[in-house]
Image (cartoon, rainbow, N blue to C red; front, side, top):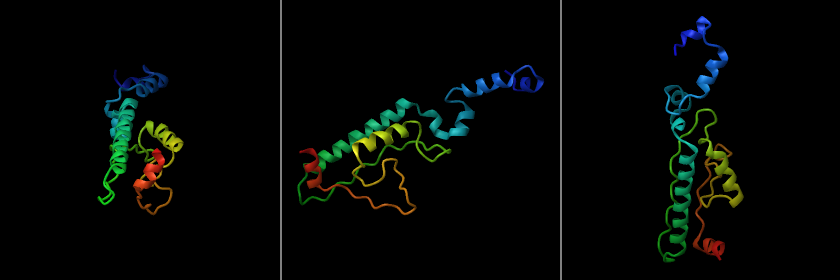
Length: 138
């Protein structure tokens, strides 16, 4: 297909819009507009969320079952996700992940569910104490 056909009147604006709208995810146009997020599907975001939840559960288990005198464990880092240029959030699963986190409460790290604080100052990260975790699981 030749893009000049649109200028020549052989390709309607509607047909051109449909072709652009349904470009494959790995097309150069979508990668230029959305960056790395164009390559991530909903399944990729869900899998990253599962990995994050599993790491968090393992961290909670290890924190509760460690020696009281031992040094506190570092909170696990989430799997990096691509950030879209339009709104600065992660891709399509960010809305679902934010809703799921808000249903279960704030994350143990003390950060907001979307990962960005509402103010310009960074909020300090606070991990729950072993007593708080034990009370949560009892």
